Length: 113
Length: 112
View 1 (tube, rainbow over the protein chains, first blue to last red):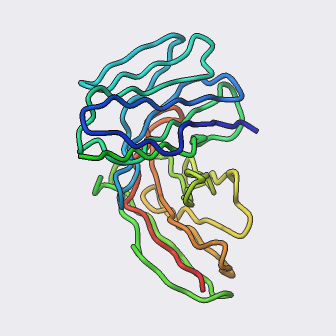
View 2 (cartoon, helix red, strand yellow; view 1 turned 180 degrees about the horizontal axis):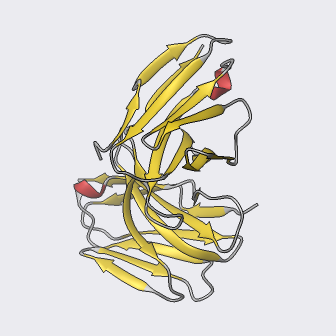
């Protein structure tokens, strides 16, 4: 079945440093979504990428979808304490098959003031 | 996100007991999902439903059953709970198959 790998599992940064998490799928994705889960909270949708090579920005966050639609990344510039949480990528395969998202295991972002 | 609610929020039960987790939504979405989250394993899909007449198994449906009582309600049951079903359970909704998903606050279940 489809697998979505996400690295690193944990990332410690000093406040103000940049952060990147990477997501790789074993199969081509029709789209990829990114979610953020604050400690003790639930996943909250951040963005969706659909097109090959697509790049989207949300303030300090930059999301990329690979040309082959098998990988994606999330980059945060100049992290702040409010960025703390776990970032998940999640993908849909194209065509038929099971619905629902296949999630990566997430990257825990820990920020030291 | 108060549009998707889950009850109970926390539950401790014993091995062999029957447990029902409930999810309600006011978003008017047809698609509803149940996921479980375990430390280090991310979220895994248990069951999903496109409408009240359509129920589908996800990646890890063994040991679970669901009921879609109405468009707004989707319940997850553990017929005979076992300790390895201890996890955080999330309900989610979506307006379309490829659309963003809206998660409820989660139910933390502990099976002793």
